[in-house]
Length: 73
Image (cartoon, rainbow, N blue to C red; front, side, top):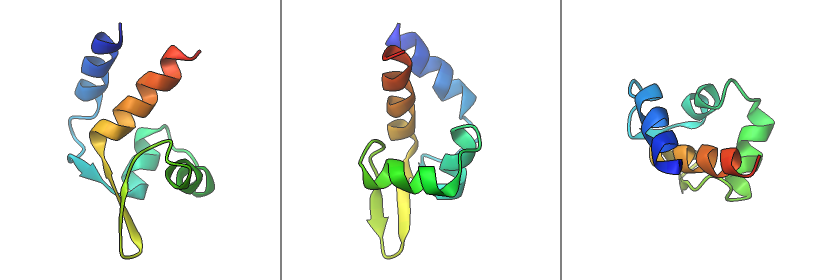
C-alpha cells in the first residue's frame, strides 16, 4: 500500500522541485501554519537541511512523512 501512496504523492507533487522551501512545504501539506511547519522541521518529523537561516526540504522527505502519518491512522 505504501508504494501506491508514494506513487500517488509523487504524481500530486510533480509541479514542485525536488528541494522545496518552507512556503512550498506548507502548501504541499494543505496550507498548514508557519508555527506547525517549523515545529515539524525542528522535531525532525520531516527531515531537512538548514543552510544559513533557510530550511531546504527534499520533496521525498515530505512524501515519507505523509505516508508514515497515513499508515498510523
